[in-house]
Length: 422
Ligand code: AMP
Image (cartoon, rainbow, N blue to C red; front, side, top):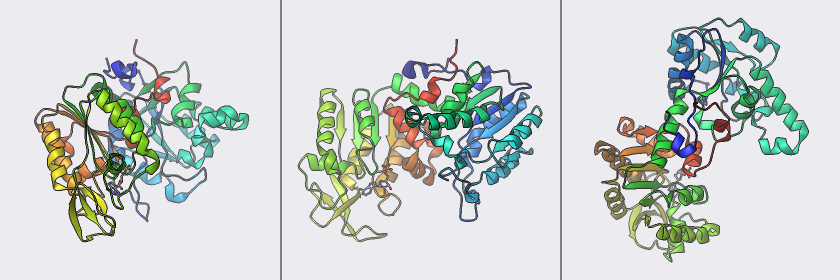
């Protein structure tokens, strides 16, 4: 059984459970790859990660229709955001032709889909060239025209296939047409998850349902407001929450510290204090930075110094200080489960990446010492990759926003409707 069941109350069928031979399989991927100004793919990581599911379908004689979004074209064709380069790269990686459909719906696309033979692979053009893809279900419920438009778009995609597979964890927290409406209208046909989502659910689900202890969460990044839900959900589950990055200063100001010009969300100070109370009640230790690397002006290689305790007026904290690094890494050592989301400082601007680097090394060391470690995508994932520590982390999530919502304990409706194991 897929161990996610215990946390998400569902054990999902995977593509391995479906006999795909002779079937048209419609698969939602996350091919939202980074492109340079000439539309060259600068990292094919997301394509590579989809290969196990793709190969499994092709090798077993399924005819595969892949769909994805790329960037934010706002419902209009934008050649700079075409998925054509992805089709080319995928074809190289698979060692076989990948048919590229210059539209994702319409009669020509349907004809191309019908012509696919067992083992053939086709990629549809960017779904977000149609505004229907991103119409939110809430809006569709309130507006019959939007509902109709979203349903029609989804029906055209669904009509091409016998089987639906979702392997796009990066958008799994959304209710896009391709993620939610397509499987809804395909009721009665197999609708399953791919191996990438299976892996995400396994690690994220397992960790939250049955963590080995001590269980330590490390949170950082810009805003407390983005992570309130995560903290609220985690205080009752983890033994310790380490808070760094700009978000720490809202907590510190609430505790009466001077924070100078450091980023702070004044509107959330009360909420931050309430979270600290909630943590105390739940016996969850909260660790905040005791010192800070501070600058007068945030720019590369700005003169900086360390402030212990308070930050003086005119100075801004841009990274955790050496005492905080020591305290944080000591608190990570010995953990048996670690979840990390968000950098400890302005890590894009060395030397203010020091705190994030040290935390990354401590998490990697914890893995070496037998802990299960999870990085929740986004900036902390980039930091770990930049340091070449990827292989030292148990699981790096492919979805920053999705993994955060998972840690908030939210249910993903587009996964909830997919088939469950009997
Ligand atoms: P998030 O998207 O919420 O994970 O935030 C990531 C961003 O937070 C990165 O761009 C960091 O540069 C920024 N950040 C982290 N710590 C600080 C800080 N102390 N001051 C300003 N920005 C920060």
